[in-house]
Length: 357
Image (cartoon, rainbow, N blue to C red; front, side):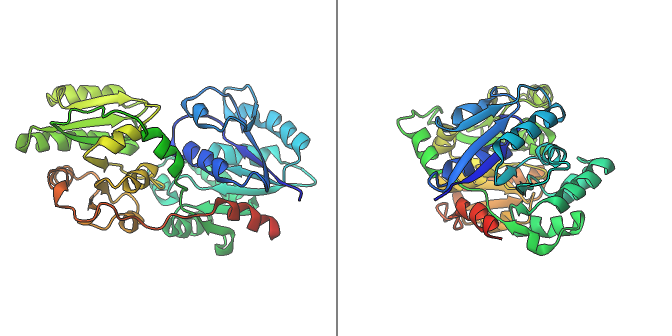
């Protein structure tokens, strides 16, 4: 049987959610049915070590996505893929321009990495980029939304037809998680209550709110410790100053990027997501899988599907310091930390079904 050729375009191998989801999809595809190639600007980046050893990788040797268009076009011409997949906005746009005036275009599948509503409300996209993305989505064969709510937002804000959008929850790499916690030692002081949060150090992740809430937590129980995992992408110095100004240096720690965040998840007492907005937080799914209590902001409507309030976690309002502190202090009252929705997505269906259409 002839294999379906898929080109994944992932500009940068940073440790973000879009990159992790793309890698998880690549890992879970049936290698008997698909011939997979990953195209990157550079192999440098923390996510590189998570790629399968036998994966065919093409490096474009450029620093910015905008400079990669002509090189990407040449790769597409030479490879003649059946499908091209992208999971980040800049990748979507580069693919669009790379295929300009192509006679025999491959099918294009684009995954929306974030909530269109929140991105536009927070002016993450300017008007020009918004209109360009509208055009890019219209030319795509399929758009992947991470939640039903995100699908409705894509329809509303990008004017895309319902049947063109497919809801597909982020795949969970259970094998990798098990391998990552196997034989790992507890990195924490077992006499403390260890709280973990993870994500890029950006305003989006709301770590400033979490740190402020910890001041209130410690005023009641000084046994709590907060460990924040994540690469600094602009907020690191502000967070360090905030920690110092609140005299939290002995209880709040910025651990930076970690190759293996799962040992911290596994040995923690609870996990906290303090985000102002999200697409679909992989870390919440991973911690629920590890049967950890999860406290999360209502940053997306779908969070109430993942977390059953007062059972496997607590839901709090975005940017509400007091609610977050109270939830952290009451995490032991949760009754069913092992529950999680069914995440048995078949990533192969995304590509096989779209080839049949």
